[in-house]
Image (cartoon, rainbow, N blue to C red; front, side, top):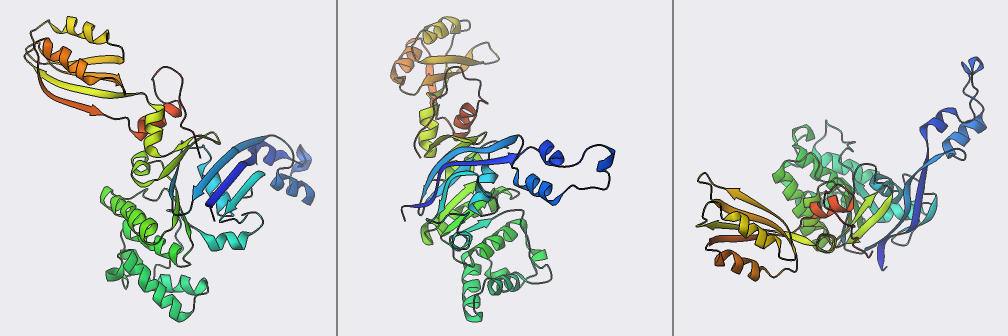
Length: 369
């Protein structure tokens, strides 16, 4: 199978709440105590008439086997709707969707054999049982034999580092341990595709780091799983994902590796130079000379208590030859103490693509699926 997940011109519409509230229902005083006919209720549920909200507007994605793929976007972008469609929880309206070649609308059982979701808000554990007993219970619900259940549960407890606490009641588990137990439950059926929705939300930095490392080292590398995750944590996406898609208002507006998204969208970087030996009042002429250099977009200075400036910060084009800038600074009598450049972050690119950045000029989109 070339692609673990593929969507082609995927469209999902939801009827507006006002139509749901009124479609086919009697109006006025006669409406009291009357819920309308059965056909009207079906029409309201199906959303066959009236205005709609398009949650997904022609989504095209191809996620390769064994890949860690991230879905990013602001609230309301359509990320959760996309995940629910893949998990067979929501039916799509137009287009095509395939999970290891199976259509979630027509082949529900086959899709669920290939994909398992790990949702942070999901629980379903019995708080009177230990972590191990809970997993054994779910293994039997999933149809594993007693012997296979014991073997799989022991393997997963070791896999997630919970063996030492396996016989503790889960009310004694930390949030991070409960998240790992959720992962154990998701892996009981050993599906090739794992879907995460905000996998580290609510975790402290140390626990979040451990969970991310588990996704990379255990799930992707050791187990060879395909991992799809939705996240608001842009640093997490940059660290974890082989490729990402940025969604906004139901559309994919950029899709590529995190590095390519950062560097194709943003055409500049920050240059910070710490200096000494400046003569008070001399910075004005130097700044004018720097501003005259093509490729320097903005300059700010840090002034010391004696009136001398101690450092310069410049936003410069990525391809600018910094040697000329440094020669100009040293030629003005300054002593250069340190030079640092900062590459654009994925957060910078995200803000620019989604229109939350104050930079001027047209947005450049990273292409490719």
